[in-house]
Amino acid sequence: MEQAIKILAKATGVRTEAPGNPVPPPSPAFLQLSSSVNDPKMKAVALLKEAAKDTHSRALERLAVEVAAHLNGPFDAVNNMIEKMIFRLMDEQKQEDEHKLWCDEEISKTDAMEVDKQDKIKDLKAEVKLETAKVGVLTTEIADAEKMISDIDSFVKEATEIRQTGKKENALAIKDSETAQTALTNAIEVLTAFYKESGEVAKEPWEFIQKPVNLPKNPATWGSEYTGVSDPDKQPGGIISVLEGVLADFSKMEAETKSQEAQDQEEYDQSMSSHDIEKAERVQEAKMKTAEKARRADKIASLSSTQKDTEGELEKTQQYIADLQKACVNGDSSYTDRKAARTQEITALKKAQVTLQDAFKAKSFLQIRSHTQ
Image (tube, rainbow, N blue to C red; front, side, top):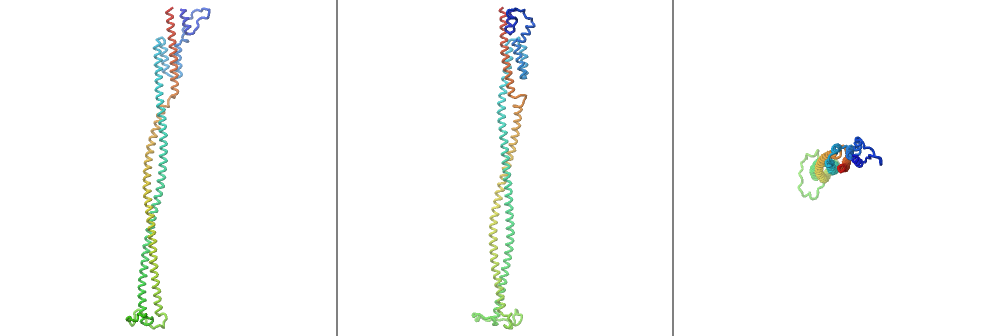
């Protein structure tokens, strides 16, 4: 018995006697207390409980309880429990490492997708704004061209009315002038013939061979009997000269009116030609800009549709990012903390495993020594 106590004391590190002075064997209560404090198996259990407390691991805490309950059993049973726990923790860490890699890739890819869609929406908005401004400019230019066309039409209408009126007035003036000239010419001829027959106006030499004109005794155009040259106001040269002067005025008026009419018509034709050209240019300009405006309006509609679709995609992307935050980032602890805790648990398990292995070897050695003695 004493020999067993010595061996146990040596294995546990507890001194049972002073050098050179034998002491009585310790009481059973003392041996139980010493073995509880210095027993390597209990140290392993304490190590597991401490690690469970530090890492807040209920699984490790339950394992410590199970190991403590099987300390008197075979080492393989206890070791299997620890090995299973180590493998489970390593498998959990492997799965979380894979999940972390997937999360990192998804977050990186989704963040890049979010930035890309935001940039695309920004570019689309800028392009829509630019196209809208161009449509505004085209609208103003089309309105200006159409106003110019309207002004040209109004001018042409007014100028045509004025030209037609002027043309009619000139035609009437020419006709009146021609009628007056015809009447004056006839009157001058009648008066000249009368005065030549009366001798008041000398005949031309060639007129003597002509048959004399038979005039009535009292012409109806005469207001009274001709009394000769004693009255200066009734001299034939005076009235004929006046009529010839009026005839010349009407002839001049006719010539001037015709000249003015030709000039007015030429100016009108030139004006109409230049305005026709201007109108054609403005019509073509309005047509082209209207077509361009329609194209840009279609482009704006297409851009706006693309922008709306992209905004919908961005909303889905941002929702996916929020879901990734819940699955990959948010939680009671971070990936780093969980990995450190598992590493701490695995380290504690391996230390406990080694400690228990040594303890079971020591127990086996004591049992062998005890049987041999």
